[in-house]
Image (cartoon, rainbow, N blue to C red; front, top):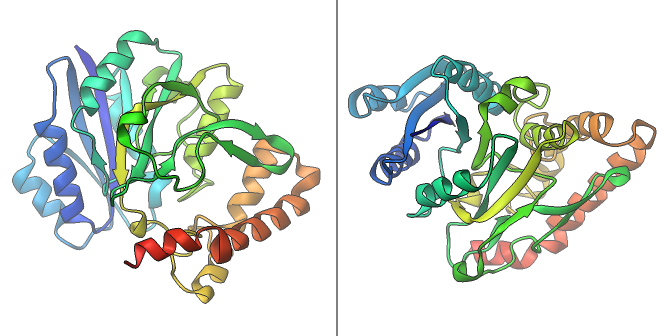
Length: 298
């Protein structure tokens, strides 16, 4: 029996969370024992009441509005240690798993060892499915640039997605981490409060000598409209987009860029990296994702 602690942070998304938990329970397989842990960050929409009423086997950790993503994950990791799991699986509260997710997960675990981190491929929930996170085949350290396996939001038939590939960057939407690695690397870095802690963890794991892979068989579907305000692929308005650079909780946070460059790039090139981030993200917002934003509004 494989023991997996499933960590799900949530904030005022009761209905999305309920659907995910039901899917986790209904798609469970005998070979995997799921320990479901939900970290509730200041929710006021009845999430806690719903969990206590309808999901008695789910462990609940209650935090406040200031926990954000990374602290929620770390509190879940620390709680999971009491259960002595073989692995942890990180999930977001708004995702949908493929129906064969756990059978694919069990198959992958049988083929790898506890020196391997496996990320799930993520695609848009709306059809036609487009690749949101398909892994990074090359990381250019001096400019902090990721060379991806797929173009951003590349349309891909599900039947063509299969196999296991090395990746430099991982997404918190579906990371299977052997607990011994998580403990050794001291969890996620809380100086990345909302975005970047998953990317940072993957790079730290690679530096420590661990294998980091992405599976195209582990498919997760996400609602991209629910991501950070100001994200280049969403049409939140120019003012919101500009403000996002100065919001430490935004995906575009320059504070995140600074820390990321110091840890994984070259500090002497920090001004250049900030300039590249601003120009690259602005180009993506105004031009690169124009076609995708049009499909969102259909």
